[in-house]
Length: 312
Ligand code: GRG
Image 1 (cartoon, rainbow, N blue to C red):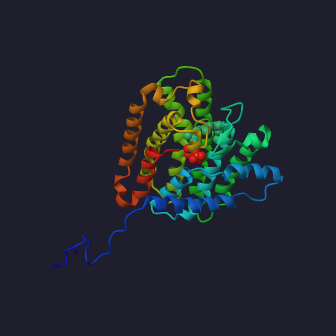
Image 2: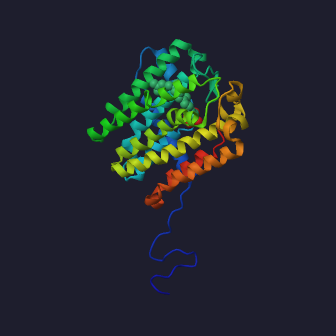
Image 3: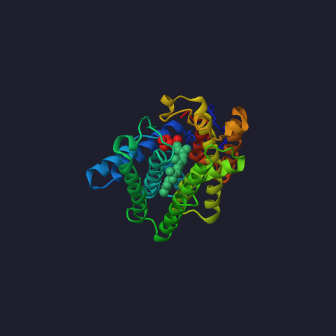
């Protein structure tokens, strides 16, 4: 046998077998770390009723896709995910506040979220608005005050990303166009505008901030933006599909709402099958920007597939 020969199992005698990546193990371990950090993230907010309302929604479960994307992007570029955890928590806080406000009677008027009654159903509209406000402020505190070991210039960039995504250029802008489009037939361009702002923008902020904290250069940050736009739109297409194909029980939120509200959705504009193909196409495009990272990209590659194949 020569020095370069492989064993019958195909493993080079000189090296260890390359450990195979197990996405389920990765996901449950990342979720566990995120849940612990979220649990520890709320300080002694007073009054107690505000704290209870904030905790009710923040710790209500959810897939935790956004914080996990942030941690994965940080590791992709060679950073220490622990340094990105306060930002990962901040992103989940922004996401949760947007869900609380989205569910309010003045917006989407929903009773069910993450398998439980919505925040305003339990605590009332005023408290739900205030809990959302407090979570948004706490998100910025997590980054600006509670991040250790990250250089101030990187943190300023992260704060900038969070400000952009939570304002008119991001979630709020998308929500406004969505509200203004109610009961109207909108074209694909408007639909994409809504989803790029309501959904993709926050996913983009997750990978961009994670990469920034991990020390990414401008080219790597730009790759993260492209990746997130693809998975963000795909995420929303799958959301639209699940709204018509899954039950409220499985989704943990009211199914069939788009049909009842006569909303324009991807399945309505393209049909179910073309919507599915479009989502797969977007995910494939998103994954292709990760090519330069080879095996290091396995978590983000698998997260992109997860977005396309999720059932809730
Ligand atoms: C941020 C200041 C500020 C205001 C928010 C209400 C609003 C303005 C925007 C609405 C944003 C919104 C609710 C977008 C929908 C995004 C979406 C598809 C949510 C579902 O995400 P999942 O499936 O949920 O990841 P889980 O529960 O798993 O976290």
